[in-house]
Image 1 (tube, rainbow, N blue to C red):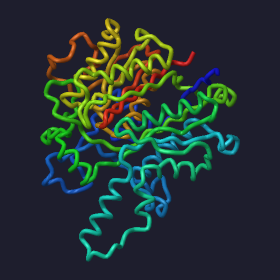
Image 2: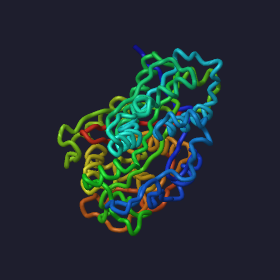
Image 3: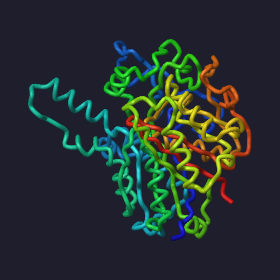
Image 4: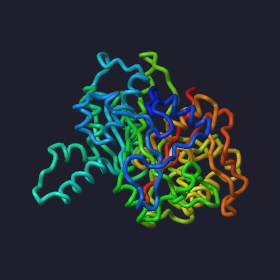
Length: 416
């Protein structure tokens, strides 16, 4: 069976450094940090008092007030980003066969704030179970794609992938395969997360996963730097319209890039720590290259998982050196988490958007906040430190990994 070609025809981004794809891209190229003191709740007794929150965002600027109240923030974010992507793709909802349009979304946690608030309200009450009737529909992780499909009438495959921080990359790979196999013409894919909450910050602090650089939040996310001390929690959404190539051509759609491969693997090592030798990461990148039918030396750019954790950054770069060999030093490697923080289940989506736009614009965004060389990292690697670099990017790879050992890798190519 001949597989269909799959292309990207629409993008939408709602991030801590920009509320549209264009704002997001401009901030990435300029090296803007999205980290700042938390405004959502009192952090006085928290170890970490900062995060990468959205800025100047009001859901009711985009959604009906009554409808917005029925949604957790992670669903609100999904609705806004997907609306932008659908508009960017110039999809005519009256012409498209909605039975062949799917929504496959990623969320690592889902409605954490809703769950937190409902349980706190019960705990602080008189014991009477007065729960909001929208408690469950707001909380469940699959509700974001459900709402996107309801709003637009999309009747194809509709579900959420959950693989912690690899969730939205997993969603993209599923979407790629549905179109490749001829089951869909178009899939709205991506991911959203809204875990900057009391429970989210408290939980990640308890794991010692977050940076505690409270005196300088904007420099706290520092992937590959010897003084990194944990990741910075972020929030938001990224949406990508994937479309069968001939379908896109027939309607004269703008094509950003082709999605040529996706890979999955497991570390099978530890609940939260990566394998120190990066064995699962090597496997996922090799799987992705094989799936795409491409050679390592064809890759120009890798947007790493690069969370700014002591173990994770070293393991991933070891794996890159092993898989790409001598070619690794010619690849522009970066971590856009240095600017956005870690969006958990939405990370794969917004980082794939960054990779796609790097292909379109011929610019690789920087890894900011690098000050001290880590002797455990190969000095020959080009980590695109502190300043964006112009270069032709024909092939870009995006890596995303999650607690539980989940690894996902997506490969994008400049359209021929």
